[in-house]
Length: 405
Image 1: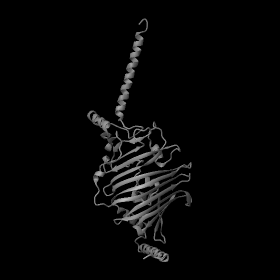
Image 2 (image 1 turned 180 degrees about the vertical axis):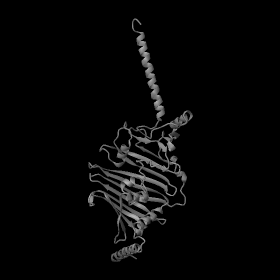
Image 3 (image 1 turned 45 degrees about the vertical axis):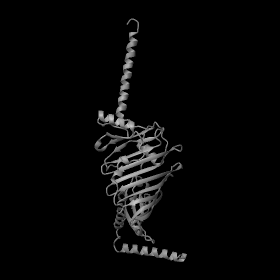
């Protein structure tokens, strides 16, 4: 039976009134009279996500302080198990890069590429990057451009301690548990809900808990420099629908900039609320701005079993031929694996001669194979010795040909 517009309107008003009344009862019964109780419910809701796999289509937009704008599409595929701390996160997309092939990759260069702070004539290049974590190690690999083309950049694969804070800026791993409550900085750093709430507690405290007519709850954090408002929906499993963070001046008044906005849409799968879409914006007083937007397609949520074999460096896709794998845990720098014929031959030779204990670059530009530095040093040294021998030989020959000698 089709409802009339008036009936629909009455039904919506009744639902809102019911939700508001239930929320007020929830607050008045002492179950949420303390802000910590609301936060507890929010955290418990996110803790229901134990494992899952999804794909996400997204876009990264930016505006520089000079007014230049750009858009970088990106695709993400992720498999995770929070309980076992397993993660496989793969990103394909594009970056704008204006460095020359002879340049070296520095942290500043990487940050400029990721943030979009680039020159107007920067070239659009393809990006592929993956981060993997299991109980034994954390590792990542990335490549920018096409193998063999000038200006392309590629990393080797290093195995680090699983609890290391080392992450790859080009992969930009994010955590779905902080959807709707993180700033872009927190989102790009991979902060989960616990890290975001810790950031809130470091610089501010909850000053009010307000209930909207719709039943949504506003948690307001305020400190010396910033005010952050989290809007929580009890009707959707205490998910965070929106976050607004604004700057404060010396008197505590709200400034126009900086300003951060994050919104999230949620869906219920297998009795668990998971993000369906997230949108983030950061705007600054110099006119610059950053945007992130992702739409999710979930394959599994809280599956009975996750294949542990997925979480190894050999499951990293698209690795270029010539890449080396290094053991970097406990201060080691040992070459343990390689991709491709020539790289494998080098690996076997080095294992026979040095046991693989060699250092190697973590990234290179305009190269398809990363040769270990030890052999470059040996070759350069041998060349220098040959030049010295040739110099003294010519000098001696010249002295012998002089008259009277």
